Length: 232
Ligand code: ADP
Ligand code: ADP
Image 1 (tube, rainbow, N blue to C red):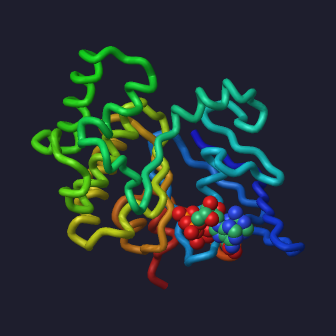
Image 2: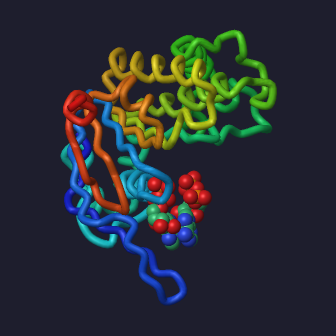
């Protein structure tokens, strides 16, 4: 479903070259939950930004489904990117809009009618268990509730792939578990492939089918949870 082929990403800053990713190759099978774990500065954000093409790799190829994203025109790229949902550590909700308004936002951009939007938002809020908060503003919600809104919003576009950028790092352990259970549920019920990046071991152990360890821009280990965390 997601394939990275020899991705290298270099940044140039005040005459200095920083290699954030070195020859990274990985394959995330359709329908799986894949985790990339590493410490701060290891290259996790750069990796995820190369997959949704917020960053263009210096070399290498990104393939989603059967399409090589690097060979698409800008119009095709915009279309493909709608198939990729993303959630973040700090939720990135619109504070001036209610829960309804946040989840409706991508549907408004896509040109759905008011009635269609109402029906779809209701469905999505039921899916994430937040129907009763439909008219509340983000500021009045807990961290876990905010992340549920963000998940509903990104699912509005019917993505094939969900990218999670430290999605539980701002949450307490109990809330982290409930959000991870929701992600697992979405993965199973909607058959959405999930790629998550995290510095938290518990997260990958809790829900990932496969995991890769990133260090200094390189994938140093890759395998099933059993293989990577096997006790010697
Ligand atoms: P992580 O998400 O694992 O903390 P990042 O991908 O953010 O790691 O960063 C990897 C390396 O690339 C770091 O050395 C970081 O400083 C550098 N880096 C990331 N983005 C940029 C950028 N836009 N310009 C210059 N250096 C960057
Ligand atoms: P995040 O992990 O959410 O990307 P950061 O603070 O690491 O947050 O990065 C914020 C922005 O700055 C990103 O666009 C990232 O690519 C860029 N960035 C990260 N590290 C560096 C760096 N060393 N030099 C320049 N830009 C950077």
